[in-house]
Length: 322
Image (cartoon, rainbow, N blue to C red; front, side, top):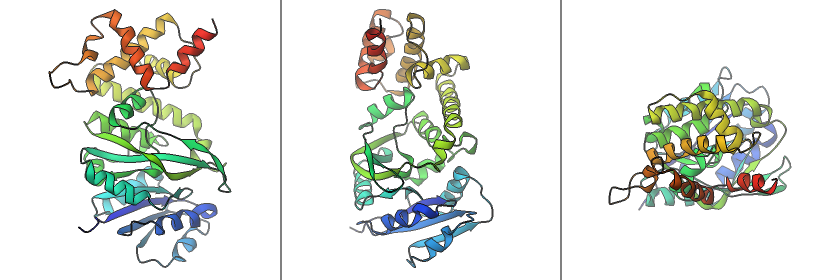
């Protein structure tokens, strides 16, 4: 059986310092049947020269006359791609040699999964090890991770099905620089699932020029807005924006203390989302659907959720500081 062809999608804007390593890591994949679409987002450095130096027939370089931003560039790339699978890549990261091989095999074996990522390694500007990062494995854990305000996938390390991304409207530019989280939320909102391979397949570089470092506050605000809209779309009932902000203040950013008052408000939001997004079991019954009706079971519901996420550290810290 012939390996399915895929397309690697990368946008670059002034990526000169790390671009050679990024491109080399793609061309050195054990999985060979791919195209490599590089969108140069109006770079003013030597990015284009570096890409052209490779002289590999799989590379297609598209020069954009102006910097339209990452989300718009990715959407343009998706429209140009004619393969069913797309592998994302950033110009400052490194893909390990078997990344594509393992992700293609996984998607071929798990047709219900729309997006697959993996564990990853953090490296510094010189490529030195900073640490390892695990992400949730299995769709249920991914769902719990994202509804507790965390990002269950590392964007430059994912592979996804083009038809699914197009079906939900692609990236939304107004949610930059949290366009990836907004995309994952809309995947779940539309009934799709995500997964991670429990192996480190990508190296994510941390450096001072990184967009996510320079735009940290904006990234948080856009994540919050995406989550707010996600909740309202699912629940078909408008919730006060400040309640979602409190949810994030306690569970994600940890800048607000856990109190008896906000404990149950947070739990209500959690269970609303879980009840809507997790289908009943084969008998047509989901215990989570009963948590809202029997307050005592809310405690057990929270214990279950705590056991599947990192919320436990917040509760433990609260009890420890009494």
